[in-house]
Amino acid sequence: MGNGKWEKANPIPPDRSNWGTVPALMEQSLTTQREIVEQAAKQASDRADPVARKLGLLYASGMDEAAIEAAGTQPIRPQLSAIAALSSAEDVASYIMQRHAEGDAQVFKFSAQSDLHDASLQIAFADEGGLALPSKDYYSAPDYAAVRTAYLAYIAKSLELAGSSADEAKTQAKDVLALETRLASASLAPVDQRNPKNMYHFVSVAEADKATPHFSWTKFLATQDVEVGKGFSLSQPRFFAAFDRELATAPIAQWRAYLSFHAIDAASMQLSKAFVDNNFAFYGKALSGQPQQQPR
Image 1 (cartoon, helix red, strand yellow):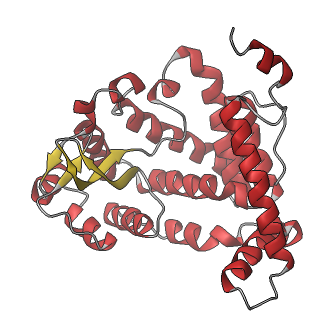
Image 2: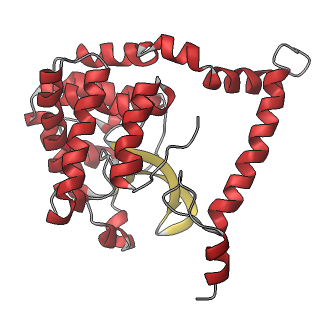
């Protein structure tokens, strides 16, 4: 191999699942960035440079392990309380819309991209999402049975750390995995995502509303404060039909479990050590084969 000499001299670090020239350059960049923010943190009391002060305070807050441990789940408690109050499909839809407006893409992704039929235009794209595992095959293929078992345990532990009893967490974890599995069955496999025709389905807002009668795109766009002109790409119709069906038929308790877990999962690396360790045990070790956790 042409890179054999380099690879022998640069083994995969124990806190990485892969390594190469690009990750090595990224690590150098992160080291430089850390030096900058550490210096800013030392000067955080200096109000002469407000940008540096903000950077310093942000970095210091992320490194204050004592405060992070003391806070426990308080940083996500308002979100979990909002989820616990959901009592109807309309509530679930409204919650998803609001989270998108706050920059937290729940269930699907929404972004601006070049129009695949006219690269001079930027249009809105709604794309399938909502899965924590890498692709749809992980939810059904026999080869990934061990990953699913580890994922189920991770979901349950996450919910338990956030306050559910052990028995409740196990039941909720099964609900989460079942809902994700149904969404996965309507999702595209990675090979199908390589075909641009599968990633573009332009519709008017009225057509989108008709396609998902239990999720109003008119309301969603208003919540995002977005104007889409003639329309946008509802990119994977089969997925969004499945999403709409789940809104109409899945028990609200199942949606609460799913949304609670994803709130915890998204925040876990910024929460206390128990959450960080739980995240690493699944995503680092079980899913990626990474033997050692990276330092905060």
